[in-house]
Amino acid sequence: MFGVPVTASINSPHLRKSGSRAVVSDLGDELGNGIENSHLHPVEVNGLKSASIPMVTVAVMPSPTLLWRFKVLLFLLWGFICSKIGWHSVMRMSVDLRDLFLYEAFLYYNPLLLLTTMVWLWGINLWVFSRSNVNYAKIFYLDQNHLTHREIWKCATWMTIIVPTSMTAYLYLYSHGEVSLAASQPVLLYFAVLMILIFPFDIFYFSSRYYLLRTLWRIVLPLQAITFSDFFLADILTSTAKVFSDMERSVCRMVHRQVATIAWFEADSVCGSHSIAIPLVLVLPYLFRFFQCLRQYRDSGEKSTLLNALKYSTAVPVIFLSALKYHVLPDSWTNFYRPLWLLSSVLNSLYSFYWDVTRDWDLSGFTRIFKFSKPNLYSHLLHGRTWVYVWVIGSNLILRCTWTYKLSSHLRHNYLTVFTIAALEIFRRFQWTFFRVENEWNKMNSRSNIQLSMNDPTNEEFKLFASTDHNV
Image 1 (tube, rainbow, N blue to C red):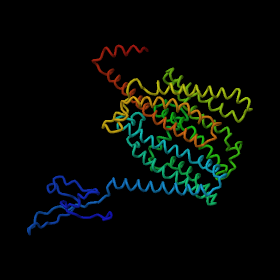
Image 2 (image 1 turned 90 degrees about the vertical axis):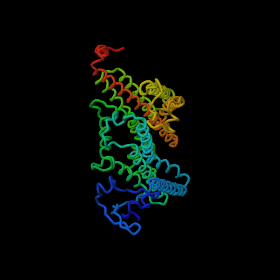
Image 3 (image 1 turned 45 degrees about the horizontal axis):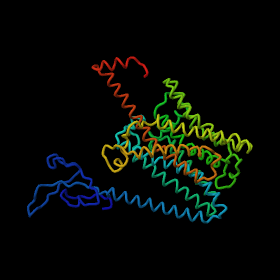
Image 4 (image 1 turned 60 degrees about the vertical axis):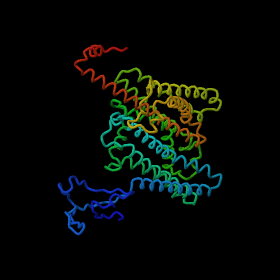
């Protein structure tokens, strides 16, 4: 009872009690093979001693379903407590201070909340890949110790708990006058995230963290051949440009000790909203992807990589023309720079949409990404349905256009609107991932089939045509 090992007979009905899982040893041939770590006791039946029957040690474990329900209950209780404390903390502040303080608190925590959402959605991506027999481990060159969707969701669960808890503590401490303790909350959180990411010991999924850091290094310095995982992660970074921009603003205020103060409210200060660091951080992911395309052209000589590089270069004028609003005269902005910004925004949105549909995805036929090996409700609702493709193409076009809102620093006055658009961009990238990974998987299978055909000695006709090495 209560986790203490107990001794019971094999024929005991308690071993089969519902609601618990009995862990027993494999008896094999029972008396023939013998059982180690068990005891033999004579059993008397009808007054006669029968043969000795082995007694096994049984560890009674709670039902997985019961454990899952208990965890969900604790999670909901935690969410209710955080919401209640946070709400009462905000209501204690004056109306004038409330909006300014919430804007600041949102700046520190919204990047991590968006990254948490992305981790949850990445787990869903991996779950669909595992059900549809897409070998994502082979596509991304992962080893056998790579994280599964369950482990990804486990990480996302902890992120979901830690980030809002820190935010609740920040609100509570500030509203109760503990300004210095409140200011330490986002600092400790960012420091903990950094330490977990670069921790050099073999804990916290060390091989996966090393893989992530190595890929990020290859993105920053594309001095080697570009792999699929390199430019796939770089594409994701372009969707999180606003996340890293807000992180830079947060770290700037932490370094200059402006957390839980209103000193940052001056737009022209070093950490203000007019800082030149904002467009520089926003443009970095696009520059990384641009130089990757140039490296691919150097290695392969394919002209399509130059067209892809041109696509990423169209984001640069969107970012810097928007930043110019705070550094030029109002008339110059209205009459000259604003029309250029609008034109570059339309060009970037339409070019990116065209590339998604025609190059990154293969929509020539119904995709098999939602055709699961074991069909279920989700597979029935999504596989082969026309509305899925209408939704994906239509939403991708709309969200590509709204994404320029986030890249434009002069349109950041309503932080809730910007957060919503950032979350929608992460959702767009979540949809994009399904079709992009499947397209790469289909290409890998096609190359494998061609290689097998080339190695087939009976296929002389195919080898004859393949050896001409011409383009059609």
